[in-house]
Image (cartoon, rainbow, N blue to C red):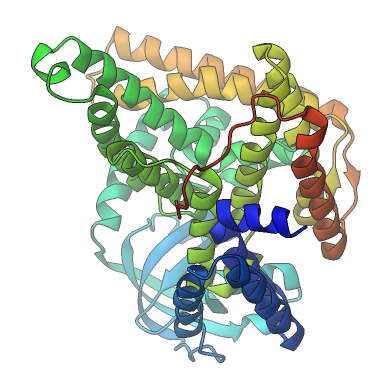
Length: 478
């Protein structure tokens, strides 16, 4: 047992920091602090260098989470629009000088955009008065403690650079609106551009098939952008003798691909899955540039600990939980599957099946539904989306500044065809999936994931360490 713990602490130091903050963030009582202290003692016993890391993160946690009462918000004033969703009303996330608000506004104010500075007058209430306690926890995870109903609202200015990136995204969306069918436009606005205003109009089928995760900009999207430009610059530089004779092509291509990836990240909005994916891409680029050994798990645990250190309530945010949890299982499952399956197609099938199974508990907890077709749906939808819809959608984005003509028309015809086909597949699978209404208790979700992780970690013995590579050969923190 000591040998096993020594190896885990040695290879994954930020895992213990993350688990400590996790217990405090979720339970926030004396027992949670006691468990966190035990984890600290165990980690420091096997690696005394970790004491400085723990102290740093707990100071960060205390400084950013010391306030217990939300600041009282005024029912009138000015604020910056950070996010918008369209339902029966216009749902606006607004940041004022003192606090954040969640406002319900009449549809007549639908011309308001992200980055607008608005003056408002509203009837405010504390989120404790909300009947939907899950929605209240979600708002708390975003540091929003008041909601209200708008009586009067007016745009009085623009906030830069947020407004500039929203302007760029608006230009792309206007092209989607002009050339694409309505459902295809709504889907691409959400899944590619990160604009969730009309997501609710098409989200039901994706929830029924448990493929709703592709509608939020995440690692799939960010990885594609980085990979696309990495390959482009790699092959471009390989034809330039001055560059490939003097510089490492991997480093040059990685650095060059970073800038368009950052531009895409800025356009899609600063949402949790996009932030996590972008930061992991950034750390990967740094590891390539400085020739450091990479530890994907440590990068993930480090980023999760940073998020929790800045806001302990973010653990109740579905985007945060699903983004980090599914990334963790993707890394873990892929490494185990790759260890004993060499056939590429079979490897993909097994990986997709296990990812679908691992997503069932958390999907049940958040969406109160379980679908027996989730494996098949993910097996079809994710490759179709990643290898066909995403490339064509980016081709459509690049065609935005082109003048109106046959080239532009046919590009968007291809985009419309691919997106429409995907939506029809999801719609058909949703019609035959017959999802079961079942909300899994939170404690049961934790127990299931604990058992699943232990099983995957202990599978090394079953695999006889075939092609098993250590994460590190020296003590590292990334």
